[in-house]
Structure formats: structure tokens, C-alpha cells
Length: 393
Image (tube, rainbow, N blue to C red):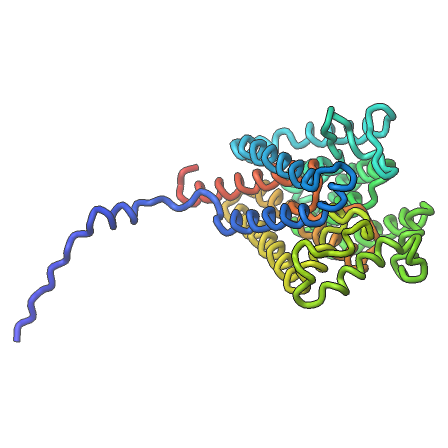
């Protein structure tokens, strides 16, 4: 029996068009994760602040509306920032750091700096205020990524390679402690250490530097009476549940009430003037109370996936020879991961109380705007990675 050849049908025009569709310019999973985090953040800010907002301002959704305005401004600003090539940030990194250091000094002057809860951290601009420490985190990553690229060999072989940037960071930390903002200082130093470790610092140098930083931070923590008070109350908050341990005990009560599935969205008791700063520093405690363990796991999973995608973008940039972009992505990923971990640790009583928000979720205009700029830079890195892979750059 003779076999007959099977005729091959030409592909239809629709199929050809599907084949010719270019890949998406950005990481869709990253964008979906960001939308989930920001959307959940808006929902929880509304829930955590509705009673306080109604009592103080006679408008139950004041903080939600204000956060939404900042989000819109952040998206607009991010749309502009994403147009800048990563090389632009490398060129201006030094000037950006100097500018931020200048603002950190200026904010300490009465009449320029705006004090909230005893901390001089904001520069007032009409109805808005800029928290300079948020800019400092961004500028530090942008500058340090450039330094790690320029002095990579010195960092790998010499002790002086990491002493130089630590001296600059030391000035920033001193200015932050003058505000005071111990939480931002911890995040900046931890992020810088992580970036230098990823850049190839020798392990013995890294251990020595970490020991020095830990000793320095410990001395700073016990040198100020209010910091020492926080440390002792953190170790046993129930010893003074109505004074130094009040905020932490109220947060722990929120965790205990949440159980597996929570008491229900909007049904938190602790946000009813029991838990201070429920919509800012202690938003995760409200999430624990209203959404329970399942809600906490979802939030942790979203942030974990977000950080993993950011590190994947950085690794891809390194593989394509875009080392500066890779260091920037690593730095931003570390910053988000460290601040998220510290915020959860503070809310759950694992770490001393500090003024740190949940990135992209907690109420705060400066934090949200800077986070939007950060995400825009990451999207630009991802875009340039994809264009390089396709041979279009």
C-alpha cells in the first residue's frame, strides 16, 4: 500500500497575527501582585481609620480619600519616572544623595521642619508634607548601586571598599536620629549591608561590619531614655499595659481576637480608639483582627511573591550585563522586604516598637509617593531587560 503525503494547510491570518504579537513590555505577575497589595491596602486603611476619621474630622472616609489622592499622584509621577532610562539615575545618583542629605539637615530647623508626635520628620508644603526619611531610603539605594558598580573589585578585596560608603551612610543615620527616626535608620543600614553582601563582599568583612553596626545600633538604642523605655516595654509589655506597653498590648489583643478567620471586615474593636496609629504603623494588627490568620498569610504571601519577582528582575539585569540596574533592583527588593518584616515584627511583638509602615499599604502620602517612584524604576529595569533580550537595545 502506497502512503500518500498529507498536505500541509497554510496558517490562517488570525493565527499568524497571534504568532506576531510581541511579548508584554512589563512583568504582568508583578503588576497583578502590586494591584492586589495596593487594593487591599486601601480597603484596610478605610476600615482601620473610619471611626477615628469620623470622630476627628466628621468625615468617615477622609483618610481613604486622601490616600487615594496620593495614589493617583503616585501613578502619574510613576508614569513620568518610568520614561527615564536607568543610566539617568546612575548619572544623578551623587547629586540626588547630596540633595537628600541637605533636606535631612534642613528639616531639623524650626519653621521649616514640621513636628508630628514629637518627631521633626516632615517638611511642610501647604496641605501636604514630605517625609524626608522616605526620600533618603530611595536615594541611598540609587547611590549605593552606583558605588558598588564603580568599586566592585575594591569591595571584594579590601576593607576600605565598604568603609567609604558606610561613612556616608553614617552621616545620614546621624541626621535621621536627630529627628529622631530610629526605624528608618535601621532599614537603611540593613539594606546597605544586604546590597554590599550581594555585591560580593568577603564573608569575614561582612561579619565584622555587621558586628560593628549591631553594636552601634545597640548603643544608640540604649543611649536615649525613650528608646530604652521601648526596649524594656517590648520585652514585657504586660508589666505596664496602660503606659509604656499600652500600644503593644493592644496590638497583641488584636492578634488574639483575630483567630483563624478574623472577626470580619470592618468589625475590629481595637481600632475604636484602643490601638493608636491603627491605619499607619499598626495596620497589620487590624488585618490580623479582621481577616485572621488566613488574611495575614495572604498579605505575607503577596509581599513574598513581590520581593521574589523584584529579585528575579535584578538577576536578569545582571545576566544581561546591566549590573547597575541589577544592584538597584536588589536594593529596592531588600528595602521592601526588610521594612515589611520589621513592620510585622513590631505589630506582633517580636521587635521593639518603631514608626514603620507597611510598604504600599499603610496610610502615608510620602511613603506611597516614594513607593510609586520605586516601582516605576523597577518597571523600567524590567522593560529594558525585555528590550535587551529581544535585541532592541
